[in-house]
Length: 224
Image 1 (tube, rainbow, N blue to C red):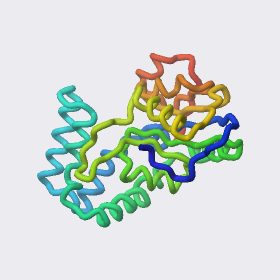
Image 2: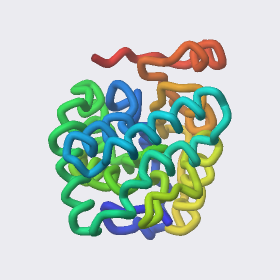
Image 3: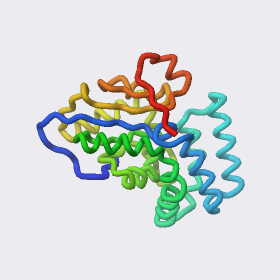
């Protein structure tokens, strides 16, 4: 189920969307990596758990693990901790590490879409436990991120075609009529391409080579 930052929009008027990827798009780099480092520095992650997480990342790079398996290994430390402690850890991570990294140009683009009446949707493969604080702080209307089990297990990664599935499920759930023509989407990697292609205004942000090669005619922005 999607995490709602605000109330659902139940009306029969067409709405347009502004869909934003997070990692590599609104911030540089990978937030999961930053999260693990922060948790290690905060002593929430033991040395052994950190080594296992690094090993899992290597296995994923070598295509011996799926994204979901690698993330599950990295977040397995969460099963040892009290939910209240984890909430504090996640909020501190966002406030201290994530929010200062958000591109100023990205914030300005969000403000423009908000003023134009578009619904801002944060669509991320990163996990809901900390992304909910990101979405709240940045004023997104809705968060669609990777669900996480209490023990840190990831069963459904919100990536690639799964992003489109989550978007359409949210639209159906809220009985929305979406006008895709004036809608925008922002992404940085080839895995964002399915989401970019459903709107009338797809925008590549600091795009990786595979995305540029796959869609060379899309608009490109370079945020710093």
